[in-house]
Length: 149
Image 1 (cartoon, helix red, strand yellow):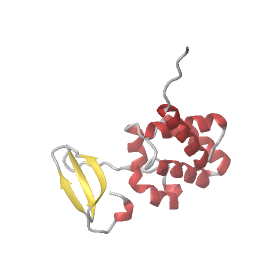
Image 2 (cartoon, one colour):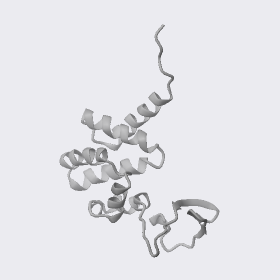
Image 3 (cartoon, one colour):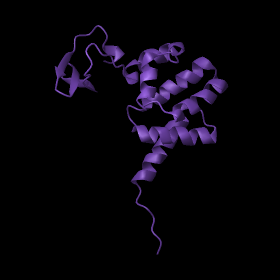
Image 4 (tube, one colour):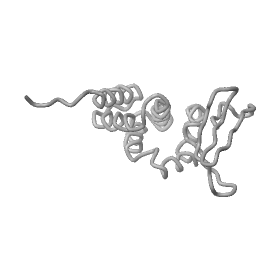
């Protein structure tokens, strides 16, 4: 559940394969239902608002490790993050990465990763550069292929 809802009463609807969390009548989370008794899955996206305020907690976060193991946090993310920390410092470089991850709420994952890769190749280590490149990737995907005459 998103960290902003901590301490707030929400409604959870369980289905055979997934669960849905509602704040009032608004869906705020949808997750695959865990089969393991007392299992735990953390969704990195739900912690981003807290982690941007305390970026020092990000590198060791369990939610980050789970996102890595699920392929949601890719080697491209790590490849962009390393020079961002070197150039901006640990705190600000990590904060820039978290800003990029927050963009994932509005930009499809594959476009965001493409934006990270292109920004990295250009040495553009800001969230603004990544969003610009991600939008270009989305636009390129939407354009029909050019055919020869």
